[in-house]
Image (tube, rainbow, N blue to C red; front, side):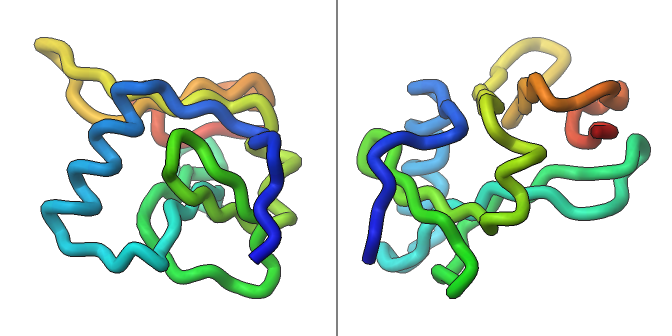
Length: 114
């Protein structure tokens, strides 16, 4: 498996810890990586994909803090420079996406337009 040395996205330490916890709690096989991507839909045009999945032929593969990251090569245009954070506040709990490529985002923070 060819793993790139530099990832086009960043994942905070707290998000990495939550992702590793989810992997363990849900008994996700170690050969699965974290798929980060986009799909059409959501209130702003695109929504984010974040979940564990098997590697596909068109994937770019990266490693961040021991976590294998899978990204469809076509999604790099929309995700380069993005940060994934874990938010654990009074009003919001979950993964947050900070995307410098988004022209606008929705109130829920899980969809954007490019």
